[in-house]
Length: 70
Image 1 (cartoon, rainbow, N blue to C red):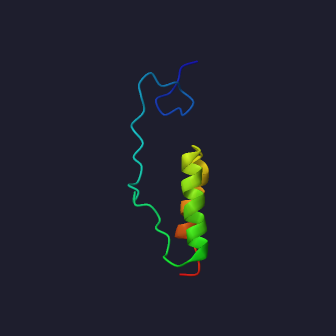
Image 2 (cartoon, rainbow, N blue to C red):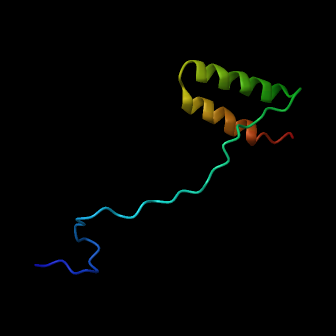
């Protein structure tokens, strides 16, 4: 049995082309001054970073960015 050039199940013997990812805005979500929720999330984000929990820090950034009150 020989693999056809168009056979998707055929093994490749060469690397596939690179994946091109979209450019992301690297600016961090900024809390709104005077907002208790943003202030709390910002403190939680700093605490998470200090303990090395980057996942929790990212979650806080997402919540700050999506905060519906402003």
